[in-house]
Length: 95
Image (cartoon, rainbow, N blue to C red; front, side):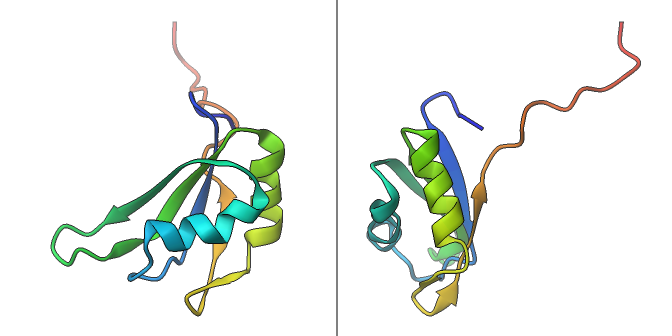
């Protein structure tokens, strides 16, 4: 699903010593990257194990999901999927 700015994929099993440049270079072959975000552990300063990669188009993001899922970065196998669900969960019983 599209975020406010673009199409975001979540990358799991990212090596704790990976850098934004490592992730950027690995995912740049699938399209023009608008943003890369690695969340760091405050105590250790290492990556928490996931990254968010934002593309400008659905085709670029879909290509990354299809082709990068199961690929290796720093000797770890990556999981790649879309970061957002199809929309908000609708709950019954409201007025």
